[in-house]
Length: 235
Image 1 (cartoon, rainbow, N blue to C red):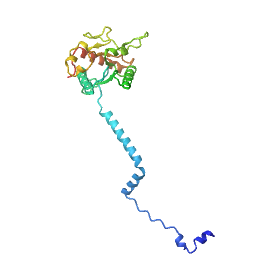
Image 2: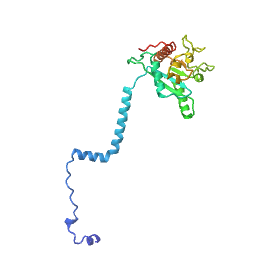
Image 3: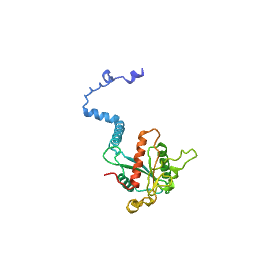
Image 4: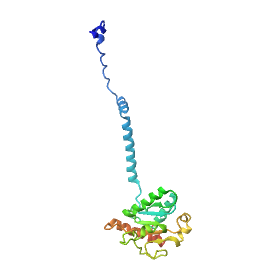
């Protein structure tokens, strides 16, 4: 009754809903605009992810493969350009191990001194990780850090370095390293002067029953011998 009272005088045609206008066919532009309006957040996230993936793949494909990987442990930090110079300097005593036409030396410079204790801790952990995993066999270090590589426990399991079959001034009594302290090159070269006065070269034992690690060991020993005897090998 109430409905009829309120609708009194209203025709049936006025009560009918307006018919929906016919849908116009979507153009490619309108479809894209509609898609972008509803899905732009997802598109942006996917695009960023794709760009990151392409960048990572490009880095993997184009990055240089080092012939020698070295851990350099010092008290004070070294500038990146000093490390790069030393990498290139050492490369003249190496050989093209991977056959890509050039000799590349890669140095991980880990300073354990200074006042930035968080950096010291991170570098100390990185050094320990390299020693445990055996992924790097060639170590350059100041003498005060030698115990980390040469200290021997009762079971003889804590000496990481192998004796060098090297006859040159600067070889330690136990034969585990060669110290460049008496070598004139680092005293005369302007950039090498910035390196520690004493720097020991030692080669870690290869992984047992691992032919690749054994070959890497021989290559590292050859590099140390060539450098200690000042016999450049790279052309």
